[in-house]
Image 1 (cartoon, rainbow, N blue to C red):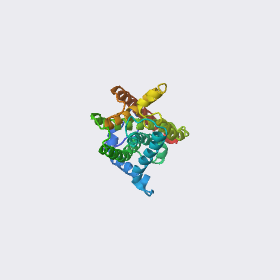
Image 2 (cartoon, one colour):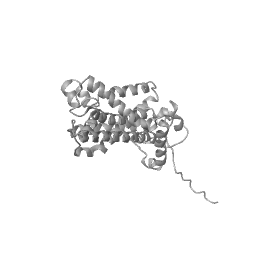
Image 3 (cartoon, helix red, strand yellow):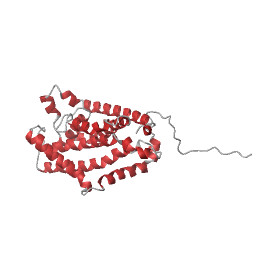
Image 4 (tube, helix red, strand yellow):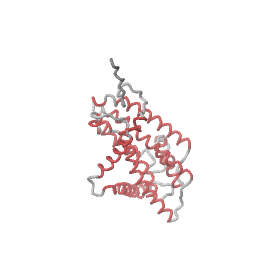
Length: 287
């Protein structure tokens, strides 16, 4: 009797997975899917809009103009001697990327429940595609910030970049880790507590005022010392302050604050992966 050869499988789906298993090999195998998801997010979001990708420019320009009028002119909040539009544009550019990653990742289970229930692929690809697609928008807004910075440099304003500008890629990585980690944690919680999703957008807007987007850290420390610790320990504060310090030469920078931010980002992304990997096994039953 002829022996049957043993069957071999390309993919073996099992419920017993390690909580910190990133499935990096599978993620690399599905890299084409990641590219398609990024393209889908970009096309679907602007397909039925009149101005299309011009919204990448319009939104930060209008936000900067409003912040300049309200916080700069009416409230008279200090910008550490920097031109007000440039100061606000720097904060808005960083904050928008973090907020977009957090908001869109926080609903990844609910928004993609139909896809998750029909076909197998590494679930981590979905939040990664959100972070990658938001990188396109961040790149456009960052280009707008550079154009504005060059404009003010040509006007001989007293500011300029320094060697800390080399930390820029690292700052982008920290923003991505914070947004991705917090988003995955919230997304896992919203599978059982739907009303949490309604609080995310509102909460992110409030969190912006506890970050140095509309005021420098020096002003918060000088005028509101009793509450400044909340702002100082916000992990986005060192990122924005370092960004301004590197590109504009003005801001509060310290390696200790950046190290603290790094520790928080690593802790949040690890916790997010653990919760995400745990919930992805059973979320279809609750969504």
